[in-house]
Length: 564
Ligand code: ADP
Ligand code: MG
Image (tube, rainbow, N blue to C red; front, side, top):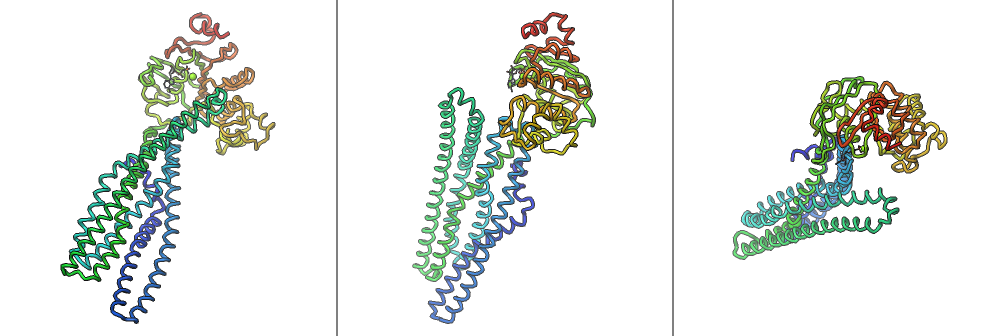
């Protein structure tokens, strides 16, 4: 329960007054019905008394009451719209802030994130926010109606109370089941959204393998399970509604029959009182019938909020300490081993990276190079052994603090549909000459001059070549003054000439510690590294300068000879 409090609070932040007004007006709106009931009774009384004067007076009262009720309704829909707008915007923002605050949250999580931000929000808006006001208003209305009834006949009211237990029992019986079904719909929706994303993203590859049939089959499967889950929810919802209606009809008839019996046996109930009860009963039937459904749906929507909150919490790492300002001097690994779900990826690796030096990591694919970089980036906690930045335990360092010190050139570069310059600066402010320098060093200056400053990169960079995207990633690193540069097969997508040009630029950044995973066995480049680390089957097989390793004529030597 507690975990959802944080997100729930976002509905009411700077929105409390609107919320109170919304509740108050919804309650008044409900109570207006009672006024109508009392007015009807007064008019009947006037008619039975045969007083034209009283009837005339009631005309005026009725007009006044209608004017007040209409004014209230206008205020209500204004306040409701305004409250909902602020609440939903606040909630969506809080979810996004949570997503952005979590580390690498989007990896494999975009489906549930999307669902939390779209489909679930409308359910929450209707059933949780509006539902709350409806429930409170119904309860107030019932309480007021009960007072009126008590005023007219305590005996009949007592009988009514007993009969009204029925709808409450129904709510208790079905609430949990409905919550589960709502949850199931949300889960299926998340999977469905994820599948659509996969298909749309993988469109070119699906087409080129003629895999439309298979993609369609996957899609149809999820499409069906989503609708199946909705169907089950609707059935449960329908069943609850049926029982609610049956319950309220039973309540009405029961009360009416009891009233009739009391009137017939002359136990203090006049026909006039019975008429008021009939009118009141007609009016409370609605709220009583709605309550179980409203309560059950509100609980179910509360479950969606809880789910969103839990996803965010699960992805968020506990805040930890920072690093001293300035640069990270040395990074060291001592006897580090790491498993992916029981599958060993690194075994007993001990290494020391010194400030300002350049390191190449080489090895066959699957030998653990990427995993090693990820551990240096503190992406994982569950390793054995020790990783330290200047003697600070990596486990105690906050990711947020670390990204200021470490730049990473990614293999899959994310490109926003914005200009090249914006993609490099990531929409942040930098001194103009620094940006130009970074653009030139990464070989993007020419591209911008050629295509124009306003040239847009397209969705996920579709207007750029793989190499150009890579250069944007490299320019981002040039721009960011980090003390460590990590690159994972960074120039894989570039042609030999550009690649060696960029690698020389990177190797020339002597103020940075450079740790580069390289799969190109280019002697000219490998010779420039201060040290080469050779990985094999998750272990560090050997290490040394290019000349030393070539002289040893062991594993690296054979790798090199196979490649060249
Ligand atoms: P390299 O970068 O040298 O090609 P990796 O470090 O990516 O190798 O992978 C090392 C081993 O760990 C491989 O056997 C690979 O299949 C496995 N592996 C890599 N990433 C994951 C992951 N996210 N989940 C499970 N296993 C993984
Ligand atoms: Mg790799």
